[in-house]
Length: 330
Figure 1: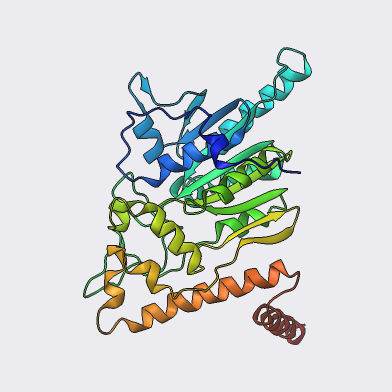
Figure 2: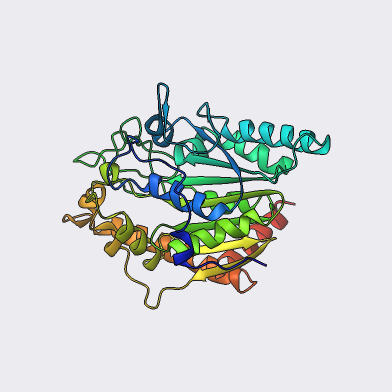
């Protein structure tokens, strides 16, 4: 049972990410780290692959981390922390360590969806007692806003520009949260900075569960998203209330939606404040808006069905069609 805590309790806790880091003003990643470390509730060892968070919090012989923290290569943060966790278990078994320690990875979407996916999948399959957190800003922001597997359909990046020839990224983003759920690990969840208590309760729940856990947190980047520097929380809320970024958790295979919008907003409410989607609202691009709205609606409907313990009609029809084709082939 997750112990409840109140906002006033958080004011008594020390912020474990010191000021003076080099992250941009309004950066979502810094807020993610602060919220997570406030909620962990025990000694923690953290690891970060190469990315915005790493290069801005540990420069030369200076660090903003008030906890033991490891910088790992872009592709292997999950492997690094799983090795540390294994060493900890051995030392604890030998009686050389007695305290309960948590092991957490903070990885960007580039090091999670793409470059580090193999390492992450292996760590999840092996069952290490760790929490992997993806701060998802939807592109390789540290190196100049190149598209990643997390970049949404149609978004303009430096490698998928929007102009007279191309109109942003032509593919939809991966659903990494469901990919992690397919590993059948004990706990998978999605969270948003705009709903901080929901986020921290999920971290707290993850800390109480043994085994591998994964938490995907939307992390606005105003430089890459071409939005206002003080819009991180507003955009995080809009992402939830348009159902672009639904809040849910999957605990031991059971899906539960943790926030249902009172009134589902159209996707343009989330897209309009972002310059990377400006071309969506130009004449002749109406079809792009319909395409992304259709994708959001489809994924939200699938999630609703999963939370009710049944498959969507569309998925059932697709499965029946595939079985019929298989029968014909045989």
